Amino acid sequence: MKILIISENPHNTIGGIEKYNSNLIDLFINNGHDVHEFSFNFNPEKNILFTPNKKLVELNKKTDSNKLSNWKRLKNIKNDKKKINKIWKDYDLIINSTANIAWNKEIYNSNKWLYVQHFNKDFYTQKYIAGKLLSPIIYFGMWLIGIKNPFKQFQNFVFFTPDDKYSLIKNKMKNYYIVPICAFSKKEIKENHKIKNKQQNFIFFGRIDNKQKNIKYTKKLFTKNNLEIEYYGNGDAKLMIDDKYNKFKGSFTKDEIKSILPKYKFSVLLSKYEGFPYSIVESLSLGIIPISTSNCKSINWLLKENGYIVNKKNINKILNKCSSMDDFEIKKMSYKCINFAFNELCLEKFNEKWISILNDFNI
Image (cartoon, rainbow, N blue to C red; front, side, top):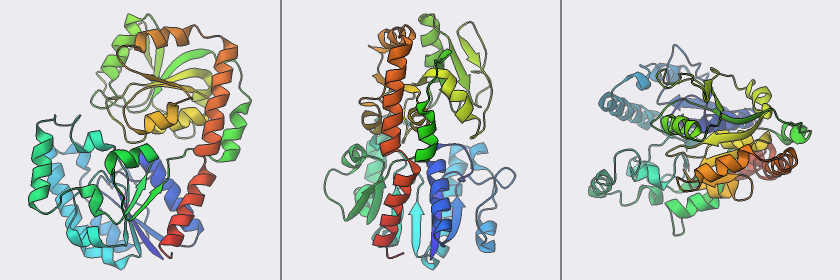
């Protein structure tokens, strides 16, 4: 069967939804399907597009949209949608994992399309991106062209957690599935049960930026509490300046993270918004206790009993509590993180659920 994955960024780049797509591609190939990927942010100089289809390779040849202004980026997306409209009917299943929810009625009504959640409702209502005043204007514009609620238009939807489903669509819809992002297999997660005493307290790993990851606030917070934190990742060079409490260690590869993380007790993610924070999935799988803001609905499900959900009122108290925690308590919480990941966030469970979805689509 022919499957088209429409992605924000190519699956071989670092990120949660990118890892999701990478897992999907592996699963589909292993089950004998013909898989093509069309990426909005494909950069022919940096990324290798996964497709044997010459037509798609030509369609994907364009400027890296991350280098463009917002207006030109929107124009690029509009042009990309025109290209997708020309090809999608050639496929048996189209998986849209982009943040883009505005499509035409023919696509909404097609049972071939399956939308994979990218962000939560706060992002789509522009709470973080453009302010509350712009949100009604955007939704009024959609209403004018006949889209009353984009999420209710899709025939098939994949959510990361039940909380996400309730947040985005509170009433019943035709077909929906719950499939979280995973990082490792059960075998890989099980290897982390041999927890040794950890040498370092706090780590942040991911993209170094302030717009989403809130790095300025993180730096100020640790300085204020006289606590050291180490950062791994690439991003804004202006933010990546060492001081007494904030140390930047540079970038890392997907494979290196498995040897870097186990040295730390806590991972810190104080983002303004997230879709389904992949760094927390990796942390849980490797026995690192996550500390996170309530940056998406998934956080409550992920960290209800496996870490700390913080806000401006309790963050100082929790950081100081964590910094003085003894090794016995650290190990106890680490095992809880690993057990949760083993049961809920493993590759085997991901594959099992997606095979069931393909069966529903008679694929």
